[in-house]
Length: 596
Image (cartoon, rainbow, N blue to C red; front, side):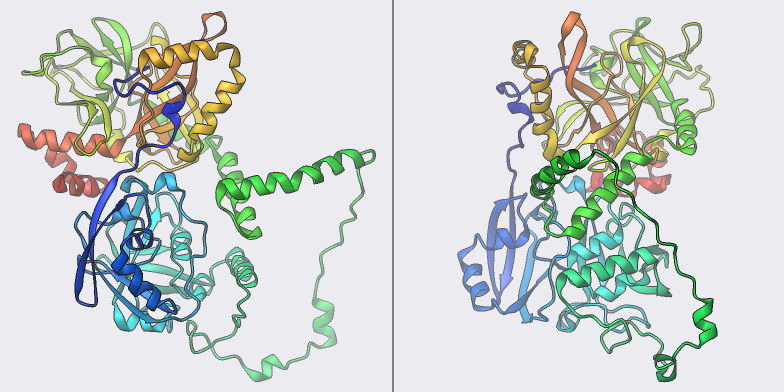
């Protein structure tokens, strides 16, 4: 396992602090005049615009109006004011105008954490028509918006639902969350439910339609009622000119009084008698005294403002921790995928882990394979991949070709850190049947459960389920580890300075028991999708010389796959390029590779 990387000489634990801010330039046009804005890529568009004096004057004059910010590229979707700057293309021209305010457009969800705002890898962007399907009478809160633009451009965090993204946007009529609505993709005619995640929607174009005129679920109706009560808006439940079309209520039915027989048919739930647990008054008082402080701390940490948001947070966290990898179905799926994991041996000795990415190609870390000729990219030492090494007397050893297919170690021109090597099995190697993990590729989530499968300490194959440490929580996790291991602070400090520890913004951080020998292991999310390659950790010697680590990390798959595609273009590997083009989940990878 890689335990260090060359870079800046930070003080101990400073490496876990927030990364340097990236500068960003775009243009905007207002009242036929064009201006340039240089900003921090982690800002919102409005924050960036307000840094320009020319815009600031126009903005103050139109404080009572609603701002429309239209993108340059077709379909020229209008973005919200909280749209992340990092998603605006360099030198892109935004058209700005002001329309009459509806008085109801606002963000309905907590803002995106600042730590996520600096990288496009955390987001999905798609466009939605401002006019809905034939049964959608009023889609946008502000009717003046659809008179000005045909589309709105919506951003979402990877892993979240369509409904959550549209609520955060704040421009959509809330009634679409009461009804069973979905996104109808223009062209393919595929319908995506509001409860689906946004991960496959990037760059697509949709229209909102009603899938079923009944409420999506009792839960959805309750969520809508909660949101309505908190906002103070009195939205009638019956049909109004501004809502989705509904059958007109029958006045006779409204005035109908139930008969005695109907009353008798009604059933009421039994009242459950609750008894106090004896001798718990003191504990109850302590818990109640602590509650307010804990709730305040949670709200500050998660940027929660409403009671319903606190409830939703705990519901999501419970769902994730309860799911993890305990379901038999997921364990079986992981076991099947683990067949693709192999031990990488250099001159016969276990040096790391790899996995079958596709066809006959093995992916591992660059630091696992050792030295090679930089001109011919020929390996200095023979390397083999051992599959099915699950017991000491087991294993299917396959030789690898001596020439690298693709390789990168260090920082690329986008400032992303990479550490990978793509190897090819020898022509005479007979690969056992196992799944190609490229077909399981997915962008990494920002939180939740993951599972690593590899060969730690050069031993047999193992798996380790753990949880992602959110980017905002990395400094806290490092401080917590330091506090718990204060006796070894001097050891940690010496190791940190000697190995020049770095914390890269793009990395996926977690606590794992996988150390040396596990570099190159595949990392799966809780849907058994490939999200990254386990690469290293901040390792030191603890009590009794036992290997300890502050935390471990993986690098996400997207930059790796993009780099592989670009290198294969340069080397003329049309066989590999054709394979990528044939994969349904590689369209975005090819798009990014083509743009670089």
